[in-house]
Image 1: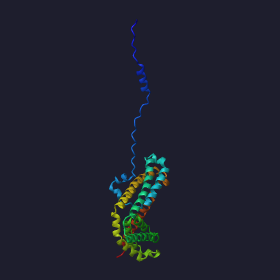
Image 2: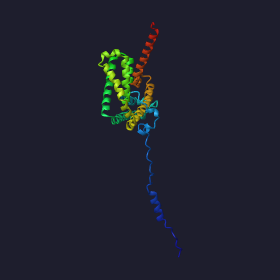
Image 3: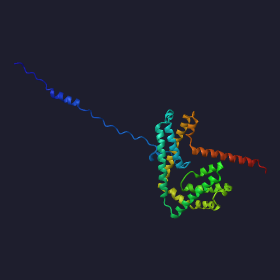
Image 4: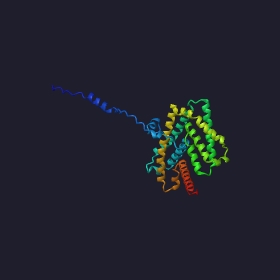
Length: 286
């Protein structure tokens, strides 16, 4: 009787391998994508250099409109701008900065309105703001043909807040002392000018309360930082636009800030006028 051959039972192991090889590989868990850095957030703004917290050089509302307009222009011209490094991401960021600036301005106005002032102080503040507007409007009309005067009014009108209103009143009293001859064509009276000075003095304590309020100070700090961060990006896009379209002056001109261009032109005219007046005084016979 031939010896029995022992056959290894490979069926089970083979089937095990088959089952093993037929299993679907387990997918490795993907790491969550890192959240892209957003320069418009509170954290990013507060991390900026303290210099960004300085007061804006134009009203936030004007800056917001200019940023929005610039973003639309850059988006329309994105094909050529992208070739010089002004990417769509930068243009989109500019639009976000514009929206963020508008939101922070409103937040600051709300915080400012919540500052504890007495009813008498609030009444004086409202009167001061109305008188501020009246004195500026009168100057716009009475000195409409004097570009240097218009430049000075634009400088005075920039800014916001109670401290700024107080400084406006003091500056406007000085302004009208220099342009007294134009008062006759306005409805501004000498009593208005005296009242402006009195209001500025009376509101000093209220301004100190506003400046020391933590919520209002924080909101103002964020607003100012956003203004200058956005302005920095806008400057790059404006310069890039003027370079990219240097062969098309009409389009290049649209990349300029109208507000700052107007102020710059008026300031130059004011300096020129002052220089001429000084020269005339020096040559006048004694």
